[in-house]
Image (cartoon, rainbow, N blue to C red; front, side):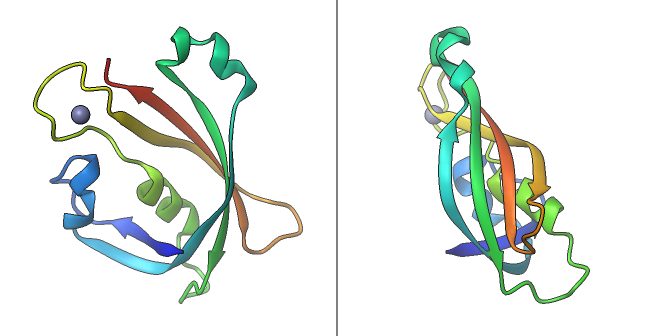
Length: 116
Ligand SMILES: [Zn+2]
């Protein structure tokens, strides 16, 4: 379980983004994560798509922007290595869909690339 939040500032790169200001709206838990089958064929796996099934809980307000929070929480761009080709992974959300018939399960489409 981790905090699900809206990112209010954008001063820090991926690994340090927790130092930005956040407004936490609830909790999230990754139930499963699968690579898209096309990943093997794309760019020798320098980049790809993963599908992440997320359970959202303890959302405080009924109209909380869960989708926006999923985008902000799962997106992590850049690193602090200070040199090219460090191999670090950046990830960004390109879709978040609430599963039919479930109030708390979301399918998150996560694009990723390696700094190569
Ligand atoms: Zn790096």
